[in-house]
Length: 338
Image 1 (cartoon, rainbow, N blue to C red):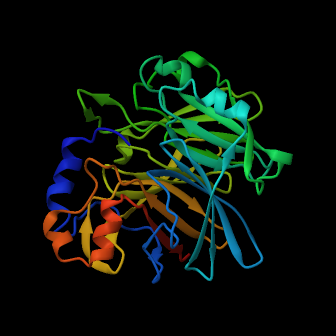
Image 2: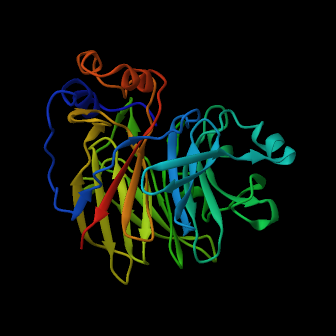
């Protein structure tokens, strides 16, 4: 999560008091009545969560992996729609030594490949040597079991061509969108930045899973998508994503040639748990879908900007204020209704 543009600043100033209108709002999504909720248990919470990936449902629990952009990974489960469990995952000594070299362990997106069982994490680059560290990394768990508590391998994948893969990355600008289908990896660039202002569009790369070669570049310039901060692939040709700066959920459908054939949007207002009448500039940065066509989104509460205005906090209870002051993320849930 990076420097925001002028439009996002306007959201910050006015969005806490008024419902903002955006074009689109035509995706068939229904907010779950139990959400949004604070992403915490009684005594545990994540920190700057920027990635979520659904794994499976087992024994009446839904299991996910979470990535924090401060270098933590979590196993997260939901029972009875509202009962949360969180377990911070450990890194083996060799992985700790490997990650110790990074200027910042800037984990952004996490993705699960249900076809192979692989887990991928997108890491942004930070100065110095941005291009050395930015990339897509494959994780391996102890015993090759993603229900194990220790990650024993953290290996960078070479995407070809590297020149094209690195063409648009910059300090704190990388592939915050990462999704997997049966044949492809989809890499969504956070955005293009010029003097701290994001451009009006960004880019999605389609990567062949076998060759790791970029086979398609998709510009969002004609589709009102300014930033990509989360991606999820439904089936083989439908991409769900988050445009943080425009506060939208979007759905892109691709044709057989992997060209964009349809784009629809949903207004993704930031809502405070217990106070659904209040809106604020939430930094929604991660998205996934479970086995029942429910979408889950998590905000990354950037400590400099994305908190409600003082007037909103003054009208909130002490627990809500404490949660915001501790920068605890909020999780949202939507049902795809057709």
